[in-house]
Image (spheres, rainbow, N blue to C red):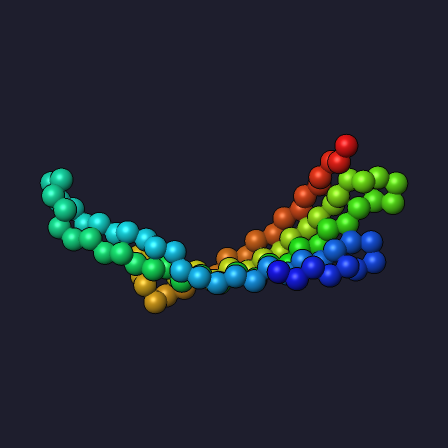
Length: 92
């Protein structure tokens, strides 16, 4: 995580990577035939910009992210996801 002050706002950089355990079970007629524990790989890169207005303490923000994640049903293959968002935080 990197926090950098830019003019009247902040720029954040989020970088992440890791593995998530996923349990797969195969059963027939309520009998467990096999069980596999997979570790799903993923990476994340996200940028966020937050700033406040001149005459208010309220905070505005925008995010843009890119995720690469392994497919649960096809280990070794990955998909890409793009995310974006805006937010507004009211401060009292």
